Amino acid sequence: MGAAASRDTACLSGMMRSSRPLPSSAEPITVTICGAAGQIGYSLLPMIASGGMFGPSQRVNLQCVDLNLPEVMDGMHGMEMELQDGNFPLLHKSLFTTDDALAFKGADYAILLGAFPRQDGLEKRDIMEKNVMIFRTMGRALERHVKYDCKILVVGNPAHTNAWICAHYAPSLPKQNFFALTRLDQNRAAGQIAHHFGIAVNEVKNVVAWGSHAKFPDIEHAIIKGRPVTQALATTEERKHMNDLFYKEMQQRGASIVKARKASSAMSTARAIVDHIHDLHSGTLAGEFVSMGVWSDHGAYSIADSLVFSVPVICYGGGRYRVHPGLVLSPASREKLKQVEAEIIAERDFAKQFIKTGSGPAPSAPAPSAS
Image (cartoon, rainbow, N blue to C red; front, side, top):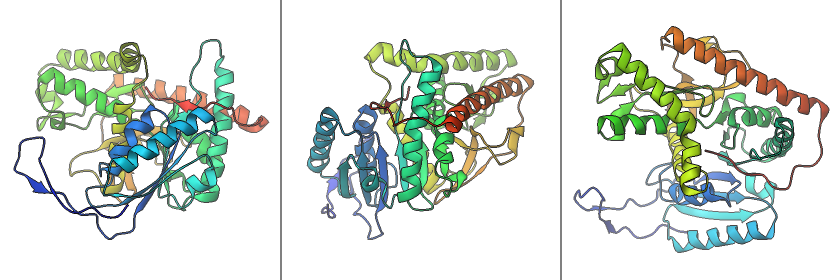
């Protein structure tokens, strides 16, 4: 789609009307979305196409891939028609396919939504074996088709282990370019803090999600309305109560959403994906850090090497980041961190068993898995 004529749009906040920016002449950014036909994909595509991920003047190519099944292909065709009908000026090209080679070709960013979900009656071993097969396929597709500096975000849970598997099967790509999504945990915790204090969510900064999804949300270093949490929450007991409340709430939040809407969280997951890649691409604001699952060979916080582990990071734009190394953890937080680390090491080592033994063809029904 070409650039649309500029026209006035009313801001939702009631501010004065302003002209919609025209797309720039810069080269479009190519984003691959794997597992695009699900509900997360349905929420995610318009956010990207409307500029939420890369800004109001950056054109994008969307390359969407999912399973070669009739109902999935029908769903993708419907999404393709809706993107056309949406008249997104920033959407340069869109592709919907079941061919990994076409979908991953020349990608600047790859978002991997699908994974094999937990199911009643299936042992942990069965689920891990299927996820190894799925992410072996994805890793090999990345290895063959994406740009060398492509940034890969794994969303399907367990995202940290799935990202590690994917990186294993894409050995020529830099390990620091593989990420696991934990921004959803950060956003959930920030939203709960904002609700507690009756403030806007953008007045809550520097919440940390350590390790992996739904494991260890930490507000000890949060900034609330410009003040450290130690000032916003006056007593140690109040801070402990708040932290414990969030720890329990964040672990149960996904299940609460499933119970309420009879489906896993899609809109908030899509928003977290957009936030993650936006900050990675454009940079974080001064004095702020965000949570990302990254390759752990950085030496910070005494975390074991060769894991994908969520830590606070500062982003400089263009996909460049560094781990924020200076947070002082309380003894209780340090203990929780080591517990989460041990769990992630055990799960990685469990996955290695299936990598060593090999396995058959990928299962036929990987599904988006994020809660």
